[in-house]
Length: 205
Image (cartoon, rainbow, N blue to C red; front, top):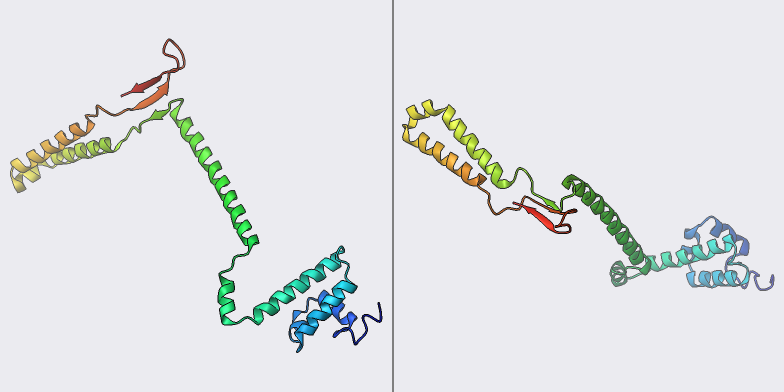
């Protein structure tokens, strides 16, 4: 073994390789003038000395792989750099896929909790219309406008005459009553749980 790893066989002494790899000194190997011989030396060192089953051996293999990748990155051409930037490694794809699955799972949990809250507010009903719908809000606004016109009827009459304020107040009242006239809207849907109609749906209009 000693004859195999003498100064003529290896470009770098064994003690130096052990010291530099343990210190993770990448620049020592990258700045060498004959990097291909450095690669040959590291390969011989790995095959002859390194036990890959030990933690030290695994660290050396990882260090060597990172060293080769760093050398490849520093010696790429402009075209190779451009091509490399569009390359997505399989591990990154797997990571993104797992992250997407976790996100979907969390969104499903949030949606489930929101549905439970909504169903709790329905108090057993399948559907319940909001008390203040858009039409009802419009009617409240129309009645409020009519009330303001009535409160300011005297100043408006002196300014514009009696016709315009009276017509405006009447139009607001008619629009408010028309908006409250709801006939074809379903206010509530619930299942009948007892009696002769058990299992059927009850629609409240």
